[in-house]
Image (tube, rainbow, N blue to C red):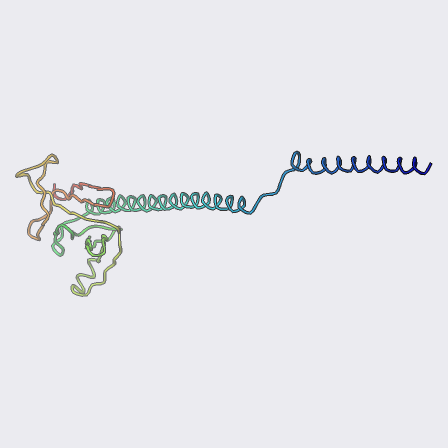
Amino acid sequence: MRARVRNVHSRESRRQKAEGSDHNTAYCLLPTAYCQRAFTLVELLVVTVLVGILGTGMASSFLSGMRLWGRAQQRDAAHTDALWTLEVMATELRQSVNVPLVAFEGSAHEIIFPAVVNDGLVKVVYRYEVSERRLQREQTDMKDLLEEPLEAPRQDRTLCSRLDEVLIEFGTPPKEMDETGYEWVDEWEEGDGVPKAVRVTLTMKDATLTKIVFIPIAS
């Protein structure tokens, strides 16, 4: 009887061990078959490096785009200033008058003439400052010139900057005229009277603007 009990216990023990072995085997197989394993340190480092490279590329592209946009804005602003400057010069040249106190004269980088500005008679000077690459405008009231010819107060302002070159030319009766119908010179002296026309050329880095102004009092 005792031997039978021992045999039963022995068979039960072997069965439990076998079941336990099967359970452990299944438990070991489940994580590899169905569960997601964790990232290794090498994989994390590789991902970090890739993200850094992508981020650097995107940042470089963004900064390059911003720089291009900034240069475009500066170019547009300089172009707008130059157009406005030409219109101001043209308006005042058309309003020039012939008075004995101030003669019409100039050179390639400067022009001096009397004009009516804001219902007042003034002496107007446009001068290109080569070293500073800017076009300067000066204005002096005629009454101040009469009272203090040497120390008359004047109003100065910069009309346009970032100019590579300014060329002022004066149209004379044709000797060897071009397609405009005038011969152009870059010097105009006090005794030459009033030119028929004035041609102003503003040269910037990316553009060259030219305007011809006909002087009504010279007709």
